[in-house]
Image 1 (tube, rainbow, N blue to C red):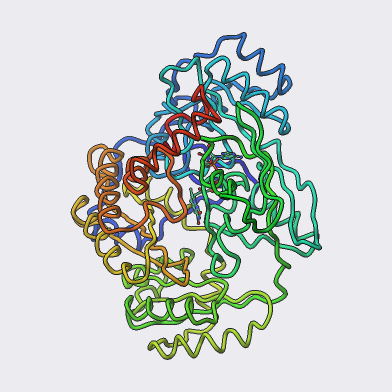
Image 2 (image 1 turned 135 degrees about the vertical axis):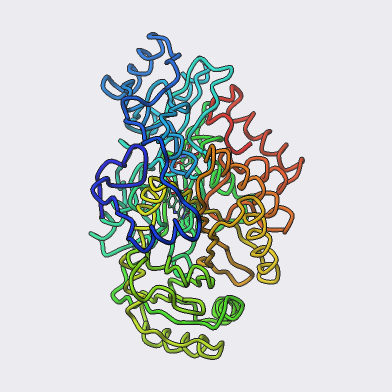
Amino acid sequence: MTSEPMLWSGWGDPAQARELPGQVRRLLHDLLGVRAPVVPAAELESVRVPPAALEPRHLDALAALVGDGHVLTTHEARVRHARGRSTPDLLRLRAGDGDGAPDAVVLPGGHDEVASVLRLCAAERIAVVPFGGGTSVVGGLTAGRDGFAGVISLDLGRMNRLIEVDTESMTALFEPGVPAPEAERLLGAHGLTLGHFPQSFEYATLGGFAAARSSGQASAGYGRFDDMVAGLTVATPEGDLDLGRAPKSAAGPDLRQLVLGSEGAFGVITSLRLRVRRAPAEKAYEGWRLPGFAAGTAALRALAQDGPLPTVLRLSDETETMIGLARPDRIGAEESGEPGCLVIAGYEGASVAARREAAAAVLSAHGGVPLGEEPGRSWAHGRFSAPYLRDSLLAAGATVETLETAGFWANLPRLYDAVRLALLGALGSPLVMCHISHVYETGASLYFTVVTAQEGDPVAQWERAKEAVNAAIVEAGGTISHHHGVGRDHKAAYADEIGPLGVAILRAVKDRVDPAGVLNPGALV
Ligand SMILES: Cc1cc2nc3c(=O)[nH]c(=O)nc-3n(C[C@H](O)[C@H](O)[C@H](O)COP(=O)(O)OP(=O)(O)OC[C@H]3O[C@@H](n4cnc5c(N)ncnc54)[C@H](O)[C@@H]3O)c2cc1C
């Protein structure tokens, strides 16, 4: 686990960069026709950023609110806050395109400073992009500049405290800029856990999880992040919201739900009261081989509907199983290429042995063959390492990107086929892999990983594919996002999903809390 600053043009701790195994290089070359890019990646110093538009009086006024030293205008600070971490973001940064860079990075120290910065920005028409860990993969961090006096990135990194733990109610009150590993460390001292482990765990923050409705790898056991949010405070240019005074309420619509997933467009989350659990005394992860994706899906549905539900439950399709993506540390190792579909099942907390035995009966009844604990341990060990592999693939001339959706069980096969067909149609002969990793009684999410040879302008190449997939998801009745959010990349498809009245309702909310339109302009609505 790392706390190093993120690589400016890639993922994670630069010290953990990974070489591609020879077998993977051969596969890329022979199967996908990948050729090394002609132009090497840019250096940070040479990245092109827009001319800074904010006037000295704006910067002075901001510094007066948050303190000298907490308004950064260096080239490096601007580049580091220019974009999120989607593959197009990284391709652009590697090409020296820092187009999305803010004029300044502002680091508030608390709720009142956030509120006063928002009031100032509304009065001066300065766009404000809240910035947590910077791991958005939907274009959530690049504000439109048109019509604004300038753009600031509001980095919540100084708001990184655990404020209070209530072991009677099993809640913990946090500031929004706490990175996920730090949250686990702070809770661990009390024998507690959140149980939220997305693949971006090493860098993403609690505020970002709430703002983008994140879902972690152990969501079957601990729930999605939005399930964990008991209360929120939010600063807007028009005043504050303090939401959530009971676990559930019949007092009208739940306004917490309006803030969750609002991606900085309706306000800045300045604290979160989160449901916590006792840290599990016992953990066991194991692998199973199912005869095919259909049989595996049926087994997962049975576990989700009739139980027992493991804490981690993940099914790779045939291609993902063959490539060995569920165990990124072992891609290219000798035993990659197993047939059938790999299931990883993990059990945490109480009654591990009994739950495991009961789940084994369900998996066996669907044709499953136990593979023992080694695949589970290997998955757990490599669970955060796949994004490092992406950097090596981009450098080698392959585009690799992930995308996700969710649907009801009855519609899942149609959705699966629609996304695959759209990708094949748009990209020729890419490698398309899929897994199910978030299950519910009524349905599940599908998470795709795509690898293709870079051709011409790789950003334009991917954007064409993404457009085709978005259309296919809408047409096939899936949601445009199960956990990555909307940002700019899914805005049009989200509008299709909720319809004109839905969009008008969101606009009305935005107009009320942010009449100047300075909050993350261009995102969500
Ligand atoms: C390699 C990789 C793997 C990933 N894996 C997963 C995964 O397994 N599951 C998953 O759910 N997601 C995943 N993501 C997506 C991403 O990590 C999540 O969307 C996460 O919730 C973003 O958190 P963050 O702190 O980085 O937020 P940021 O990226 O900084 O911000 C996300 C959005 O929320 C807004 N925002 C941030 N903080 C606040 C705040 N305090 N108040 C209001 N608005 C705010 C931002 O303006 C932006 O629009 C992955 C991303 C990457 C790059």
